[in-house]
Image (tube, rainbow, N blue to C red; front, side, top):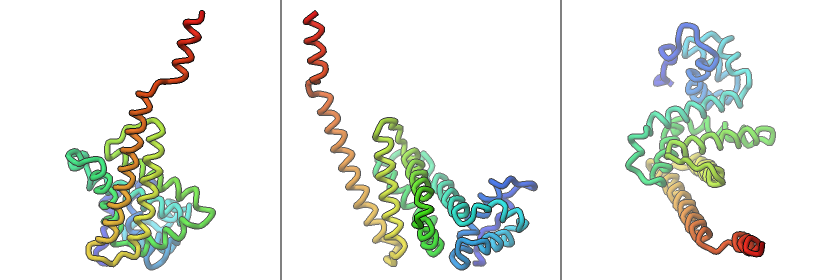
Length: 227
């Protein structure tokens, strides 16, 4: 734990609670591997960052879910920094999504035990709705970073598919001891390839459906000419 980042330099003299959450989130995740997603992890992170304990506990008065939410938001932010538009611009859409998910895995790698504990908490019945929102947030952010501008049903179907892929990949990743997590990356590649095939098939179907004669338009014309 000697290589933990130091947060004070990231905090202004009189930080807001949001700024405290952002600064402490990665430190809490490191401590959560040992202390669990409990107040002890917040207290330890506050001491490491030079933040007053009462301020830190107030910032995370939502308990484990508030800590996990802030850590996931930290991963979101770091993912965008590691995958700026200029890096993704020359890639195909599937390659962009792959790069974004793999970046998240790299960011989480050092905190796999904290992730394991976090997923166990998210799987509790009382947390399922919040867990779904966090998964959707990550998927939405990745699609937006990949340049998706869909506003129709595809907007929702793409995000639902990616949220499922990401969640499944995390479960594989937790127990992946292969070199450079090759098994997780291969699993991710297969799942993304399957979804992309489905998206292409849907696009082809929509294209054909537009070219088919419309029964409603035909009946409308009959009614019009009958007048």
